[in-house]
Image 1 (tube, rainbow, N blue to C red):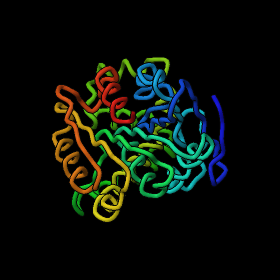
Image 2 (image 1 turned 60 degrees about the horizontal axis):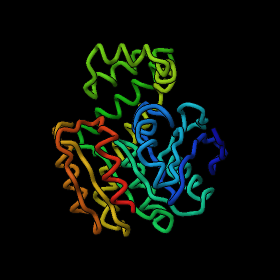
Image 3 (image 1 turned 180 degrees about the horizontal axis):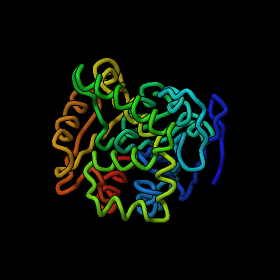
Image 4 (image 1 turned 90 degrees about the vertical axis):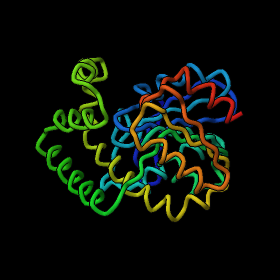
Length: 261
């Protein structure tokens, strides 16, 4: 693992492999640099790209300087880009997809292309109120040491069955996942911010963007993909047949390689 320090001096841990143009993978909830999306994608992409995977703040071996702010996560990503030449392709998954889009809007001169798989987007005022309540609940539970309960609730929310939850938490990554419980609130903050981004900033993106969704994922995923595609000037979209929110690396990697190259 390598370490850089973000603008607020938070240590951000990352790994890098392969050769070619820089491609940074931005994870969604409860993933680290080598667990979940990044660990599955790297073997398929490292022959064509210099692939950088990192622990978002509050996860794995990265630090976490309170209070949380999405701007800090954007600064983390910009610091990684600057440290490795100043330009990068970004692939983001779930909340990481929204974060990749936020970063592209914030620093368009640094981001060549963005591929975004199922970024969240908040609904109406009632959903935003419920999200705020959930964020407060997560904070209180984590303060009481109830990380496991927070993680299990989130896993059920995203559709994991009880056996998969049990197996995942019993794996070698189980304790790392439990330790990341507080970061679920970060994902909720990103979901809230995605609505304002979609309405005010998406149309200002200047680079090519590939929006992606799975046909067997959340019911709203294809519509969200289409909405972002219409809002972003240079966006195209692709619905991946048979894929869920946990998209298969073997299916996704060739699409990313074609788009980024």
